[in-house]
Image 1 (cartoon, one colour):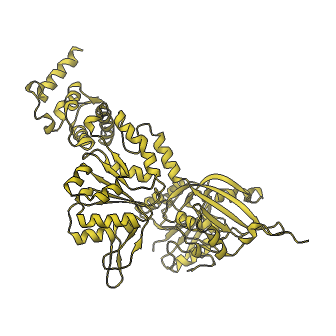
Image 2 (cartoon, each protein chain N blue to C red):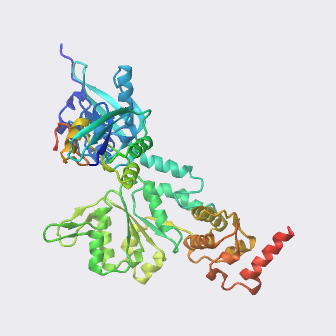
Image 3 (cartoon, rainbow over the protein chains, first blue to last red):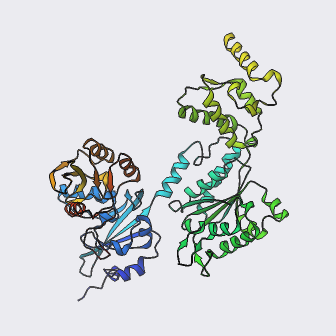
Length: 412
Length: 118
């Protein structure tokens, strides 16, 4: 009596059939022969390792997958005289073609033939880097990525960031200058499933329209030579367009088409190129106001505004001012190798009353300047930049302040 | 005449697929005319990219031939003026022979297989 063939028999060992069955799976799969040589890798594994399945066929998997578990396992089994067995969800790492060490979870199963003998191995590789990035951010008590804060207003923002990152919808980031729009875009990218893809930042500031078109969509020269636009450079990742309001109306219509079709047409070509890009756009102006004024197309605003992230100005972030002053002082004191313990009460008072129109960026610059010129163990009003001190009442001048503080310390 | 030194991290008789997990290393001294003047196999106390970098520098190695190496170590060695031919897959002998004839480059796959090979 003949044994019924296992369903997995259909896989072994025809690469064309393997490609058909395994090609579209979202996790990386490698088919290995009995000598652990690559028979086939699906698209997800090609993306993860950077190696092409065809060029890797016949190569021992340790040289293509460069999996830590296998290399250590092979050495141990050599000394123990055993063989590598099944692997179920073991966490390890690989080094990809671009010299990046990536955390992965590996599972290996044996594919048997009709007689129950092992015909090949299938190995599944799950990329754990987005998970690790997310874990790192959640463990970071000070906040998401480099968005440092402690106040309630910013905590609300940081709570929604992971959810925004996990969706693939376009995002519109709004907020005054210096509130952290660029950082938020990076945090969204790093915490998203596209984290391993590129993050491309484009400033849509004033530039000639034809150059802007090439910057956005690329160009195909007469000889067929292609200049990649930012959409192509960001393929598989995130494209961050800062200062959306500076984008001329004609290009806004083009952007609407790209968002609808995920297809761009490079200058000098009539063929569309499909792109897989998540768009994050930012503006420091009120987008509703821009729509009313006719500088932002309503259809573009509605497409981008599906997910909206507003970053509060520093003056609405309460306790964050003092927290950020301390945070940046520690950073710059370490950078300039100075033993600065903090701000004098008078310096803190002056800084607390400053409106910070440039928000966190301005605060950071002020602290950097103060730490740079401070030769004492405390930041005094005299160490603050001139523009902070303009407008202070005569009794609050840095000199009188310093004298008052010195007196105060002597008394205590 | 200056002797050049080449280091190849080893896995069995192959170029180690990973620099950081190599348990052995082969150091070869080569004269300017390409003659091998000496070779030494070293068993490393434990696999470590940091220790291997220290070995490369303490032994005045001119060229490292290796498999996968992390960006950080690659650039460190380059910064220390060590040539690094990485992502080389094959036996150490095949890689060395190819290097001595001036034809080895990063990414060379020296195993016989199904795809395009050097």
